[in-house]
Length: 123
Image 1 (tube, rainbow, N blue to C red):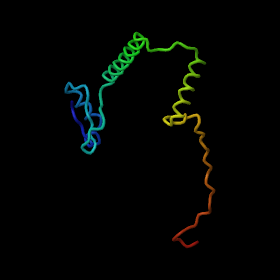
Image 2 (image 1 turned 180 degrees about the vertical axis):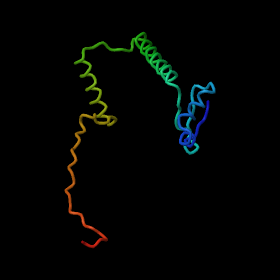
Image 3 (image 1 turned 90 degrees about the horizontal axis):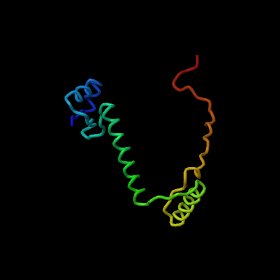
Image 4 (image 1 turned 180 degrees about the horizontal axis):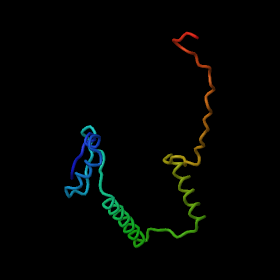
């Protein structure tokens, strides 16, 4: 795997990435201050990796269904089951309040105060 530094990107820009990927590499690691932080790759390679992730998730779901680890229920039953699970976890103290329970307050604009001129004498 090819390595680039943040300084390479700063000075050479996209040309640095293209040069790294032109050497037959599919990915290039970008390091910032000596620490590997990012990976750049061609879009086609990225799309291939995403497809692999989706295939893995689909295979996992099929395995769960084949093992019988699923529930058939109506939407209302599903919501009721989730609410009871949340309530039992809340009673045990292991659940964070849902986002809908966090009501955000609107911020008020600060009142404006007259500004004072400093360092200049009036004309």
